[in-house]
Amino acid sequence: MKTTTRPAMKMHNPPHPGEVLRKLCLQPLHLSVTEAAVALGVSRKTLSSILNGRSGISPEMAVRLSIALGTTAESWLRQQLQYDLARAEAKRRSLRVKKLAAA
Image (cartoon, rainbow, N blue to C red):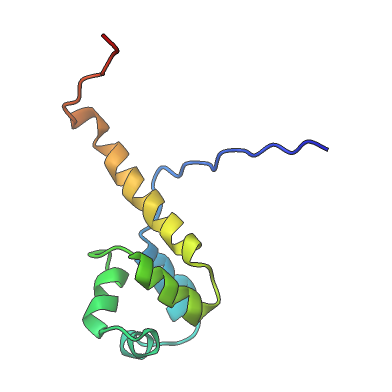
């Protein structure tokens, strides 16, 4: 049986992973930012910056989240990538880029 892989659908306006973390993980567990930061082994300031969309999910933070929440690091990094790419694509028309062609 032949299986085909479909490319993942591109989200036009994906949420920041910090928003997902707050709404789907911290709020249901009734965790404060301070409690979650202690559990993750990071400063409150670091976690707050992520939750408020001022910082992104780094590979190390993705691993920390995967351990603490029983998720995969890849899922957190994928969310961050989708968010970053959507923001970059929104600026596409303002970028000054020339097409390259073989001589």
